[in-house]
Amino acid sequence: MKARLYYERSMHALTSSLAMFAQRLPFIKNICPLLGSPLSLKVATPMAVSFVSTHSLSGQTIVIEPEDGTFTNPTEAQLNEEFSWSFTTNRYNMRDVSSEGLPEGLSIEVGTGIDFGFSKIVGIPTESGVFDVTLVAWRFANLGGQSTAPYSLTINVAGPADPFAEWREENWNGAELDDLAISGPNADPDNDGLENLLEFVLDLDPKERSQMPGEFLVDPDDDSMFRYEIPLSADAEELNIGFQENSTLDPAQWADVSEAGIIRTESKIVLSIPRA
Image (cartoon, rainbow, N blue to C red):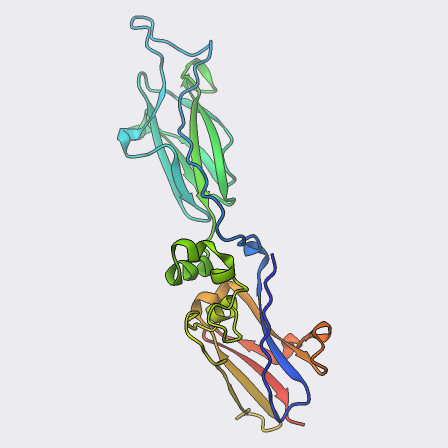
């Protein structure tokens, strides 16, 4: 989804009107609808199959177990952050592990030395989503000897935090949070002409009428140029923000202002315009 918001501002020194727009970058383009159902957590259970290993005396199936109850199943991971999940078996020290379904960036590390008997899934996941992973441990190297029952592990890899969604939750709850006509990016519940996404970008209160912030002044370094400076929320770093212009105010005639005249910092965006 691409969200674009316009704000018209009269400037006596200009022959055209300007608009500010906020546009979602590709990696957050699927942010809306903002209230999708949370992913259901899946409870993983060992899968009993005909070839699983059993102890010759007790007849007990040899299975993989999370280490000491410290590691849970399902388990949570964060995109592009270090992850580790340790496991062992209920009998024997297994010397090799096979896996299927691991997210990109994760791999199996079989324990050696003082960690013998304990293996780990380690790494930095580079893709988000819900991954159903199957693990099988083997008594000897190179997938030799007896094996455990296949063990199913669910890894939920969360994507990057969504600052706009967090902002919505800070300002609304319950039915209002569920109602995109009130809390959605294009809604304007306080009727001040600034839609919610733009109020977020400008660090305004969406429940109180606000004026468009900004300062229009002569460039102190070049008196042939005007500067239009608008403060920005630091939380809007993931949004692509720019300006558009329109000499006719025809909604179909808006055009992007060249990025060459725009400077963006963490705290503001500045548009430079010739005075003449």
